[in-house]
Image 1 (tube, rainbow, N blue to C red):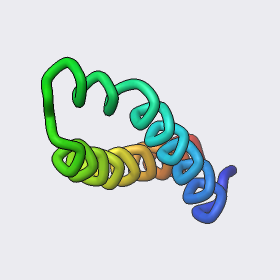
Image 2 (tube, rainbow, N blue to C red):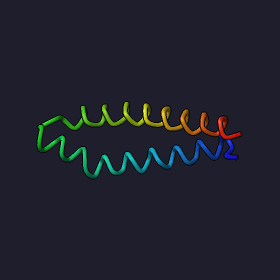
Image 3 (tube, rainbow, N blue to C red):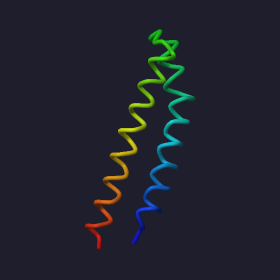
Image 4 (cartoon, one colour):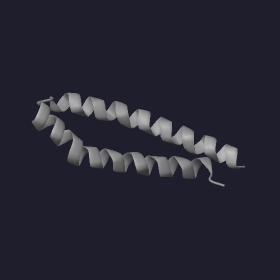
Amino acid sequence: MQSKLSSLKETSLQVLTDIGINMCIAAPLARFLHNIESSAILDIMVIMAIINFGKTYAIRRSNEKRLN
């Protein structure tokens, strides 16, 4: 059984690694291939990180309840 704190830590680590990958791959591609401004890329990344965190945490906790 995974505690809420463990779920929070695991979800945070996953979202942070996703942000790192996006900064290294997706952001430069959006900037140079589609000429999207850096501020717009940052805004989108923040919004997507918040959505991703909420989604991942909710799924992890709902699966934990269902398994017990």
